[in-house]
Structure formats: structure tokens, C-alpha cells
Length: 266
Ligand SMILES: [Zn+2]
Image (cartoon, rainbow, N blue to C red; front, top):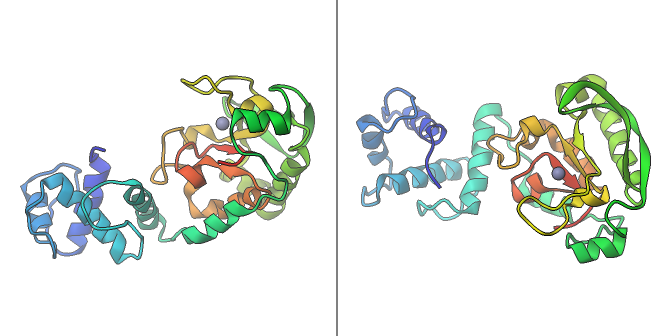
């Protein structure tokens, strides 16, 4: 993991807020930033700069009751997660729902969606590309790659059709069409697509018509909570509607591929 300009800017901003004079917030590590960091309580200066910087991010998280794990100056998954929450909090002033609530939501699986292995998917859904039916959408979608194209129906697996309809009806009733458009809950990146996973030999869940992509431009594959639009608090209800139907978001569970939702468990 490398510290980027945005990490350094956040560090400089927080140091300045503490009155430690890190200088201009420019994302560049200069003497002022280094000296300011050395003034932070608990920093003995015995670690290299990068480790001091990461430890400082962990400290800022801890002060805001965001669990970044042990303050050890190492960027593990817990720190990565905490950093995303911190960035979001600094930007919006809102904390996401506590993690344990999300965990509880992940446990709901009223339709017994199978686990995501090609064997269990085949056993539950049958052959890839088969048993597809047309879903008339509760609200119109737009194609993510051609936003002037309106989509009123698409093909999905017969076993997920009713559940999909339930989720999207809930989304329409809760958000309404204006909010749906503003939040891009209608920007659709596809469902059925018989293909192998990128760089792999196993089938993508799209191959069974049981996965959906929404707003890929603002939820790129490798983006985490610090960048992906769908990680923001205004999407909490969106996720609740999917999760109470047992659908799994890779963003919510793995913090990548926030565009992707599937009727298969991780
Ligand atoms: Zn996908």
C-alpha cells in the first residue's frame, strides 16, 4: 500500500486542526508535515515516516470512535475499512450504520440463495444462460453506456424475478423517481451476461442472470468506501432493500465492486 496525495492531504488537514502547523494542504510531504507529525502525542519518531503517517490516520479514526484496529502503523483490512469510513465522515458529517447492523442484514436469506461456487450455483439455478424470463421493471432504467436508452424490462433468472421486483418496488416507493435519478439508482450496467470471471476460469454470477450492476461509472471495480458513490449514507435504504431479500453486495461485504449485487452468498 502506498500513501497517495489524498492520504497526505487528510493527514495535513487533521494536523492543522490540532494546531500542529503542517503547512499548506497540498498532499506533498515536506519538512513542515514531517515536523508536525512528530509533535503528535505518542509518536516517538522511531518509526519511518510512512508508518508514523499510517499510525496517525489510525489515531484520528480512534478519536472518532472508528475502529481501525491496533495503532501499529500498518495498513491492514481494518485500517483500510476505517479510512473509508473516516473520509466519508469528514466529507458528509455522517457515520454509516454500525458494522454489526450490516452484518445482521447479511445473514438474512429468505430465498435461500446458494453460495457462490459454480457447483452450488449450477445445482440451484441450472445451466448458465438458461431459465431466463423477462422482468417488467417497476421504474424505467437507463443504460450506463448510453444514458439516452431507456430500459423498461430485462432478462433475469426465473428464480430471482419476484425478489428483484420486490426490491425495485421498495426502492421506487421509498426514493421516488427524482431521487432515483439523482442517486443513479436507475443507471443500469447489465444483468444476464454469460462470461467467465475476469482473469479466471469460473463463471461470473452474471452468467445465470442473478447479478446486477448499477452506476458502474461512479462505483468502479477497484474503488473502496473512500471513492464509491454507493457507500454513502444516502444509499443505506437501497442496501437494506437488497439485503432483506438476501442479495449480496460485494461493496458492502468486501469493499470493492460497489456496482455489483448478486443473488448468491459469499
Ligand atoms: Zn457485476
